Length: 192
Image (tube, rainbow, N blue to C red):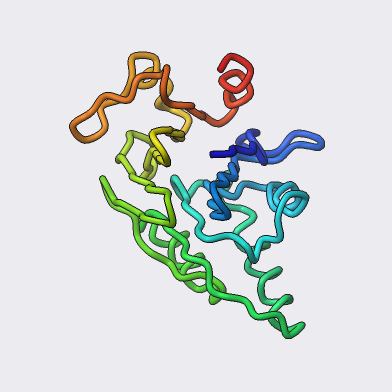
């Protein structure tokens, strides 16, 4: 799996920065975890966003989702230019309901609600969710392929990862999981 940090600032992007967003690539499959402010521009340096196979939003705080409306606009413009654009599956929490309804109204996506221990299967990749404690409905996301794992969590759960994390019937120790926590991703990437 290839991981690219598209943004790790929050709650707003610093000068030249972008908020939480991570691209995972594996054998031609492209997954986006969160889409914070400024991250779409960084994504476009790597792939055309129409090549995303799915987007998963950990929670509906604006610093994790602000570029979803911008991506919607981009996809609509591309479709008006006679490009064949497929709707992108978009997995997200169902609350806060007002934010969910805004995102649900974007026709370029196929919204699918997350729940605790949701399983998303994509070609060679499995994403599972784990409900986390945060000020809004939030999920840690684990992406697995060929015995490797990347675990991403909302910001208030860092202490969980210092010990490892119970995921279903197994403990995910840090030595086999790359753990990303917004504003700390750079630390984990430098030390892994």
